[in-house]
Image 1 (cartoon, rainbow, N blue to C red):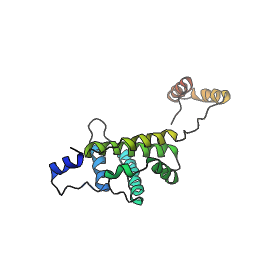
Image 2 (cartoon, rainbow, N blue to C red):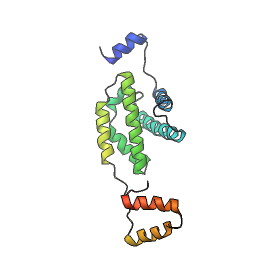
Image 3 (cartoon, rainbow, N blue to C red):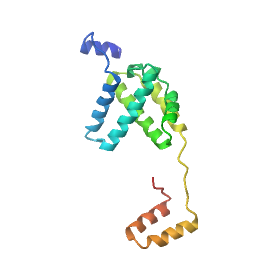
Image 4 (tube, one colour):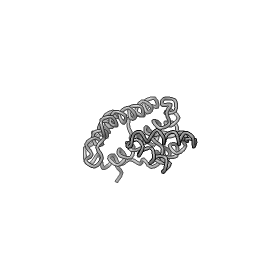
Length: 168
């Protein structure tokens, strides 16, 4: 028995999927009230903006519900993001949010999201990484000299320099 048959059996013949905006708000509400990993207010705002962008992308292609997820080309969405969001880190966040949303909605509605998930993962991996910036030995030495003035900052700077960690 397929998901549509199950939905009709549980909710009657008049069952229809939620509109996209309601699906987004439903997802955000579940994420915000998740006792294990609730979203912070700023994250909630960013997620909402990313999902509204995805909704806009879908609307331009006349896709009004995630029930048509197979019709959504993840690579096309990635290219759309490149025109809307210049920062690669922000694009990766948007892709991650949409991927999570699609998987969540797929579980709820019994949708096959595997192809979309796989394609969007491939696109996400192609995203260019932020260029790494390294200190010259002279810059590192100057930083260490200045770090002696403030023990707390000095400890942090030593940790970064000794482990090769980069502040984000």
